[in-house]
Length: 319
Image (cartoon, rainbow, N blue to C red; front, side, top):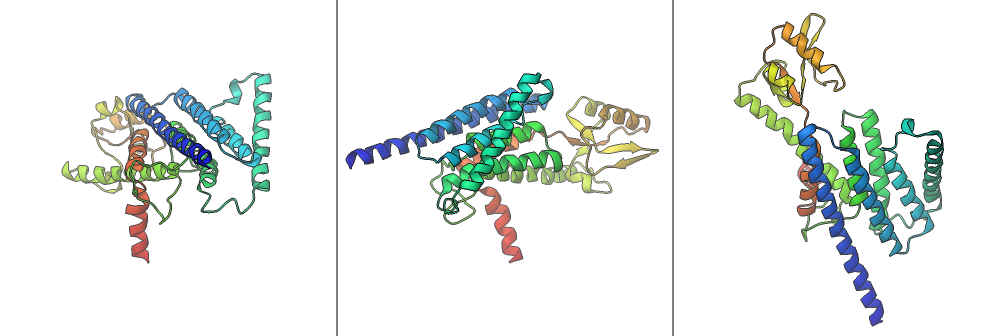
């Protein structure tokens, strides 16, 4: 009996240590990613691949210390393949490598199907938090794929960063003994909390820009641009990480609500110069990794800010 309690204590202590290792790895990854994103607006794929590999090894190690069925191991395999699918470019693989990767993809799909076919409905309950967290990793990754290909514009590095956070810190983590949570007994999975908190922080940017434009007296019709950008000298804009919100279409200079980030920016600067626009409205290429990093730390320290300060007040007003 004493031996069992001692073993349970060692395992619990080991898991707590593992959570801290994950947190510090995530902090290092995101701080470095923020620095490179701020400097160049790019983050090398190697950053996410390396930390994603470490995350996979930590998950595999943790699985070996606990009693998980074959179906859950199958889901883990499918999740790891889903993660690396974002990095492997089949066009640069030779024929044999491409065949191997396609076989792995098929096995991952079959593994995911096996999990959902064989899992007992009783296993998926609000009490089985850890299994729900494991499932949520794949759910988050799928959402990121959908957002990248079909949703509002988001950078590939941003999507990969969120996916890596899901793999690296999948389980509830908090420095605070009484963190903010969406529900009474337990909140959303930690990666979702980080993601939602980053959106909340991102929402502060339009508000800040609006008041900045008011102070600088950049008040012009149609007004919506005051939330998404500001005015900048044309020559300075050319050498900055910005996109033009004013664009020349035909013979007119118009304000665009959503800038096509893959458009020919240089030609737009030239057209604006020809039209005599000296201080065009621009929108910043904001490095999303920075609010994501802030959200990573705030989620660990404070908890679910998004649900507490945005969702709950809205629900109370509607209700």
